[in-house]
Image (cartoon, rainbow, N blue to C red; front, top):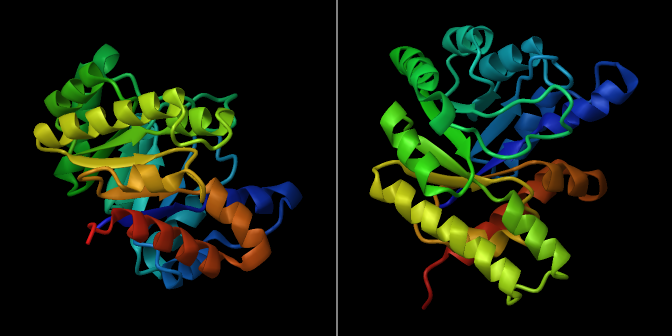
Length: 251
């Protein structure tokens, strides 16, 4: 059954706007869990621009929901992950000046280093995911380095959907969705788990949730944005309903 991982980074972004102690990401994780989230995602960045070390430690110690730690493939982050032991570590590219993650991880260009990182995480009992573009060479490289999960980057699909006026039948939207579908089939064919995420929202999520074999969607900004008006618990519940509705087998 399809699962929802809620990224709560932007709760910490709101906190950072006033450089204070609230809202608390741990409280957000609890509310998201009560709304139906199957997991919580946080990105601990090199510059600690929103989520910080104490947040991740408290999330690990105080919550009962599955934790997915987004991280760059650096020695510092591997050490933190090995100490905290999240259920999953997702390797992502990281740029100091980017607003959010831009594009997938280039595995082909750094296979040896990433293979070593994944081996170290695996030795600590941590499942490793890689955030990659919907490109077959990157998926094949992910299998070679030992990744257990591939999260396919849905940003190009989401942007095509928006630019086409939310028209699911627009050629550009159909084309980008087909790329994600083909990538998911390749991921599953190589024995890895097919996850997806980035820029998904309440309007574009269902075609992705409907794809065969997709196990988990990671969604953050849209849920936190809606939570400003309806509360986090309700925002999560509505997203989960849309996903389950789309993924349900036809009668």
